[in-house]
Image (cartoon, rainbow, N blue to C red):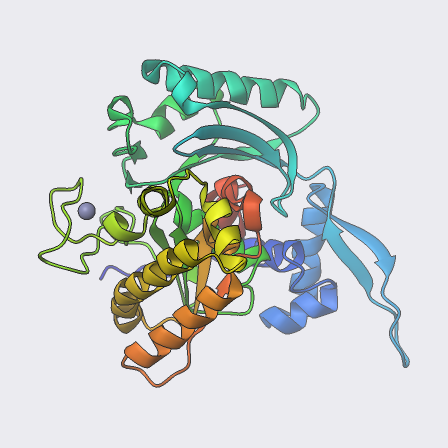
Length: 386
Ligand SMILES: [Zn+2]
């Protein structure tokens, strides 16, 4: 392991990023709060905050009234003039391009149906959408562009390795293409890693140091937060869960192996099972609603899915030891009884006696789009972007 020391400039950047994160995510709302939380002297905290206010990234709001003697602290918040984030979310059906603030609130949105576009022209369409977002915000400054795809991606090369069902999108150096065109930082990340970061900053992972974000529905995949940070591999390859085998003699998967989790629990597989049982085509949302109403076929399919998901997740939990699992993707639609059952089964099956909680994403339906620029936010909070 190669370790380097921190020189003053690196420390200054890290402290600045940390203060920005604490105020932006609402963990600290005053100068004194920042000083107490970080251990920085009042003078050092004040200097960083004053600089962020001068740069119109933070602003002072009303005074916080507190009982007792002494001056009342002044409330700090993100400035409306703070630079914005551009997020590109490439899903299996829709590509969305959004303008968001650092709270990951969507301020503007455009996009296109991926399957309605000539596959060779997807990049061209993405650029047209980014152009539209920038044109509609002539007074805004931008931190950069964040891009998410379902994966797998090579983060070191800034490349989409493959996109399910789109051979034309294999090995696209999307970071290089967008940086050359827009002259601003571009960061690529897997959808589930971004969703995990968004949950860490603004969702149900806010108070948890170690958790897994598990996308279910049409995109099975994990995002891993370890010691409060995104787990990243030295190879730059994002983690996989859908291709974890739960049966060596099982169903053949598109990856060439057998028994992969996604061959059993992916949204399209569940919908096909439901259509075979009832003769009706449904969406994942409709399947969940039917199960909630107690419909037998839907209940059977989701119960089976819960059981199979348990197999895969017990392996992941034994390997990584998270405190919590957050169900992302379309998992937020899963009726409570299946979430509770999943929690019970995994706690029964895993080796560690530490209780594990399971909940659904707090960001809900918009999670994929809202979190598309979360990697960019991570770099800002680490002081790497200015
Ligand atoms: Zn597979």
